[in-house]
Length: 199
Image 1: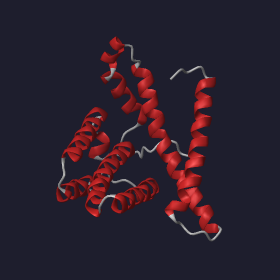
Image 2: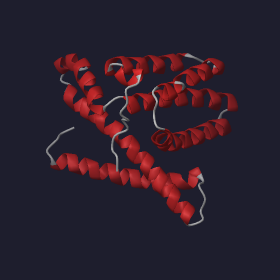
Image 3: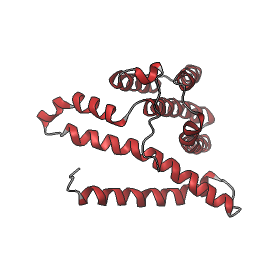
Image 4: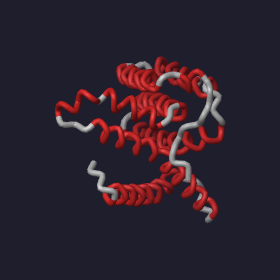
């Protein structure tokens, strides 16, 4: 199983410094949280999505990561549409989709080690307050590496259910995917603890 999202390439996005990409992701996150206009959010999402062809990324790995994430987005929208309003669901879904798409684009065009180096350097001043920048960077790296694991789990459970004639209902997938994900997380935590790493 490939435990990194990074796709090698020589596009302008690949060559862009990791720090600049992380700063851009942060700015996008702030912008979408401060925007209440769905049309502005839709334009922002469209602009982010143009980054995928601009980065000349292979379609298969992009779809493999995007499909499970946007299946969760569909559930997110449906829940808010039912319990609040369609307008609220649309607004929150557009915000979520923009941030997720920007984050996915970042992780597909940036090595985990590159992001860790930037974070460790940027968080260096926090050491004065007792924080360990190296540990925070490690947690970030583990989080990034767990995204493809979650995507692979979603796709394998979906394929198994379809083979049994159970269809691909996202709600039916949620419970087994959650259970398998928690089991994997527990095994990773045990492996980290066995190596004497205290997070």
